[in-house]
Length: 330
Image (cartoon, rainbow, N blue to C red; front, side):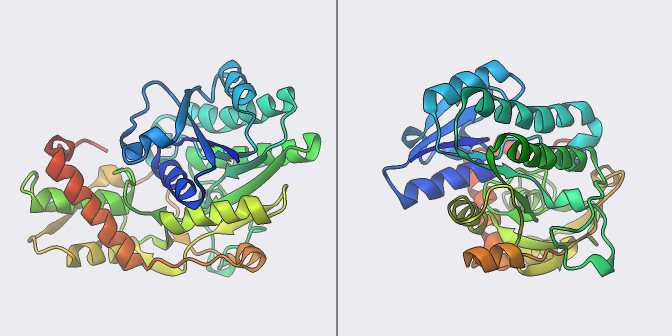
């Protein structure tokens, strides 16, 4: 099976590649990356995947890669995925996520390929919901509250349009909050864990900088998420959209408390206004019945284990590379 992962060097992409390699040694795993993309997330299996240079914003480079590979399955995970960054770089976010997705699908159309294409949308498309909307179903109105969310609405709809107009077998997922080891430190749980590990190793002050701790999220481990993605491309119908998420709901503050409970360091908490978004989505609880009933998938890894694994990841990373603990403005 020839499988292409865009964004393979990223958080989810690297976990997906690792999972697929463990499933079947006959899978041929290809990944699109830019020349400057860091390869750290692939270090344990770098020689088992084939990386090809391309850029979502360059149709010709995508066409060359797709013509060479002729993938049977494409997992489109590459994106500008940081909500806070999208407020500072809205045009780049829209260009990468919407035009980049259109380029990928247009290349498939031009080359007359017939892969199953997973388009990774986001729960952010639902925006700030009311309690009456809970749990959030796929037919909930879309109310994007950030440039990132707007870009994911665009990506979602482009994928649907290419299915309707050209028969390209797109399947869309709206993944709710997911985390785990290798998560970037611009995301709350990973950011907290990195700061705790830095304090334990005396690489930084024992002060945990935080933003809004009252937001409510339903958490899923990334390793459960990539299993869901694989099941989806094998069992779900093209043209459909599915919510995927965990079952454990907690505030961001509760996540911080769990992480702190794993440490013996004496820590204090400081609210940093720079970490607060101009507009925020504070209530995300999914209904995943459509996906779970159709596939039989269910999340298995408890939140406590996920958070412990994130903290241990940062402890190891910072012990081996202490310069990574240098505090940067976010």
